[in-house]
Image (cartoon, rainbow, N blue to C red):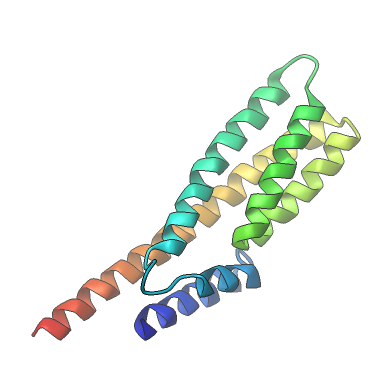
Length: 148
């Protein structure tokens, strides 16, 4: 368990250096234990699925004429909350800006925020998938070393 804890702390530090994650991610890690060894990966995977649905829904609402700012704001609010719950700081911050543009009914600003959200989500997803694959590799390597 100590090994996994160190790996997850490493993930936090590596991702945190780019500002992708904040301290909430380390709080999420603390909820993981031997009875739920895949807890963090499962939560992050659900976040990825929810993110893709929310981004599609926001894009669809922005394409409507006139744009449904109330619904877009509801999606941005939900995305901000789910981002905050896993510590996705940059995504959360863009969501806050997105909500301000929704309140102002600024479609151009909303379009820019949607584009930025898609980019931030992609960067976060790639970084976390890479870090989790490194953990899986290290875990496999560690298992082999202990078996020898």
